[in-house]
Image 1: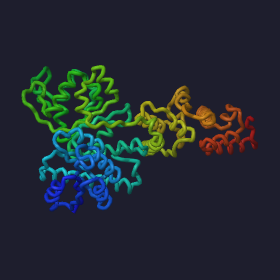
Image 2 (image 1 turned 60 degrees about the vertical axis):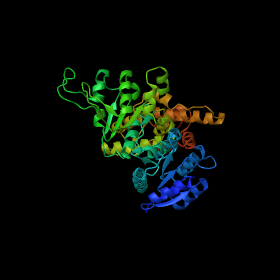
Image 3 (image 1 turned 45 degrees about the vertical axis):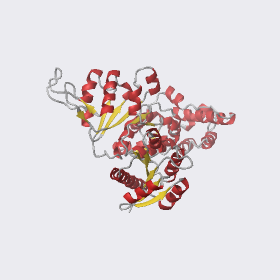
Length: 477
């Protein structure tokens, strides 16, 4: 039987829960932090029920939240169900944000609690299977929910998605354009209990304002000129599934009011209709604007923000994902190489340096588009900087180093490396011309490239070619 730990300082409640759950699960009990963590380490339960009011602070939530933090850190797949008293909803939401699976308000109805526990167990097994699958494919820690990332920031995003996937709370995904907000929304939907239902996406910034309401809520026959038949809107289509509101920061104020009413009551009316239609849909939203600024300027309603952003996820820009840039670049090269049936070996040393140091204002979308172009345009199996389609001024600015916080020696090395990379790119890997431009011999340039980890395979090829043609090194000293 599945193992469950009940953590509550009230012995009577522990006894009642054990009696009610004992026929379907193996139940262990803990009355304080030490007992709870000891049982967790010994039995590795799949589900834990947790009362936040634990000694020595039974009247507050501090100790319970500390226990939750320890469980999430020690056993991240374990599903924690917070059991809370009336009027403690704020603490329950804090627990959800800290990693709890769900919360349940007292008094406890055992049948309802069993439903929540069974859902938690179902999700636990799905996540365990996914983890084992990714591990077997050599993708553990790299690709999760179809999103590639190994940096610490993306691991935090993956962790949050796992924690909130199975609950029905509204989620706001924030981040710059091109960071993958819709991918994150689809990931949440894919591990939710609604995964077999529809995922309906509405781009609030791409639909003309006069058509948005009918796009959202649909209309009845004859509601306006051209309304020849009853038509369902995107909200209604999303019933039993997920409604994703992309670019929600662009939503006109008058429609924000109607969306807020729907979120509060979960009912809607088609344009020209009189009937209230109940819609059971989870709301996910995304934006690339500064919501605090939009609220202060009056362009976005504060009450709507709190409705759609019970949980917020912020996706980092690509420039802050240094560990992921070349990982993603190689993935795209492999994907587009197969798509266009071209044998691509990878990026040249100078192209690798360029890709790793460029600011990528368009984020992952820009990286993907640049590499698709490079694969199509490349005339050799090795991708060079010029294949990426940057103009000369962009290349120079893009690869420019940042000297903030550097010592003088580090700054000199950074400048030296930048100049070498820029020159190699400008002369498309021609070492003789690069050396002449920099005023050094080819052997000296080789040493400098080796010093900065730029590789020397293209340099050696050029050296052999030059030696065979001239019989000696005529580089410029």
